[in-house]
Image (cartoon, rainbow over all chains, first blue to last red):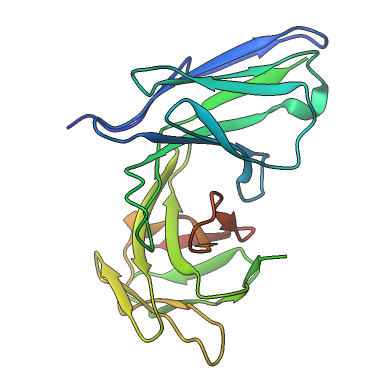
Length: 115
Length: 112
């Protein structure tokens, strides 16, 4: 079975531009989460979506937005890019059974560089 | 708020050495605990998990035991290989919560 897929793999943008990152979850998984990983640090939670509804948001500015589609794929949008937005953006999916320890499975990430 | 603290790296060992990477946590309730591994240029791979006190997670020779009394989830392996070189992240998630909370990561290098 295919794992979580993300596109593009790498992206270079300039300050002030806008970017859209895409994620396809594991088949059968209804929940998608987005994380930002700055070089040398652990991932930080941005959003979680379940059944097309936002279910959680981390401490990120309104420049960050996301949505989930009927097929459970998701997009993360970042407007007015800043140099500090340069990071690896990770998408994770989970089956969301509601049971303890529901595991989140991560994709390979999109490396965003803002110049 | 919830937090995870890992031993600082980098950690450098020789092949076949014993590995311990310490992880302690602070959380309300009874979180589930995870170890993820990140190889160079890649995303995170789940290594092992434990969902309740005294559970032991294991995979690929790695083990970690959920210790509620010491709020710890230390990662161990009896004999490391060069292929184990990677960054290891300890993480938790509270029941009903949406987000994984990660430690800062520990970079492990194994020399032949």
